Length: 245
Ligand code: IPE
Ligand code: IPE
Ligand code: MG
Image 1: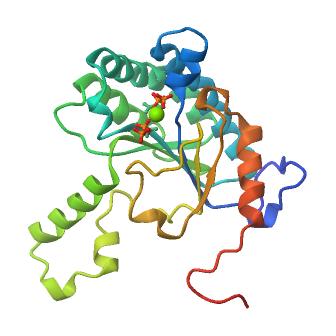
Image 2 (image 1 turned 120 degrees about the vertical axis):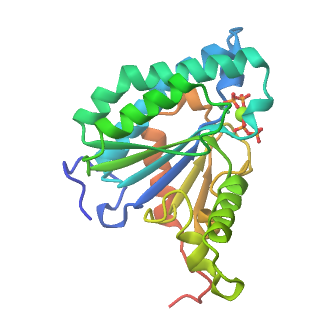
């Protein structure tokens, strides 16, 4: 699929753009520490990185972009940092949703809506979903209070609740009960900050994703790093268990 505005940078094949890119936005705390700042300043600085990545993805014509913003394990952080992250994500939505809406971005959230997520954050999420529901240029899914294991548990619970019998439970049945069953699996997953792990992100979906790791700390990530990751993706050979043709 050709991108809508044709601003694909040199070195990237416009006929091989990944449909779905997912990012683990990591390294905010270290970015801040390196500058003698509190960790929260690193989260604040990550906002520019997020918006520039979205704009770069729009330039490339990426259809689905999923960003890991808060994991089911991040509740284990100091209460002050968790409180900051809740307020920050809420205000980010208020500040940025109109701009994203104007660009034709649909906003969705993947994760558990449990009692730990403040009501006002849930309200901003619902408002953002409603505002952008008809947008089709790109779907931006924020993984918030998200865990890959929790998502699989939720899918299995839904199947049991529906009374699905054991021999009807197959990969299709589980997939169709994930949070967004209609989204394709990520073609490319990017993790920043030099950590080589998945940290409970999209466990089911990334069975055959291409993984790209970069040492860049999330607040320093910009569309150029996205383009580099896509170029690296295009050099890979995806086999899905088959042998090379
Ligand atoms: C990622 O940056 C943001 C969240 C997990 C919310 P970190 O806060 O994990 O930054 P580091 O890994 O400690 O540097
Ligand atoms: C993963 O980063 C979660 C998000 C980016 C939101 P973490 O910083 O929480 O992961 P670990 O603890 O280093 O594995
Ligand atoms: Mg981290």
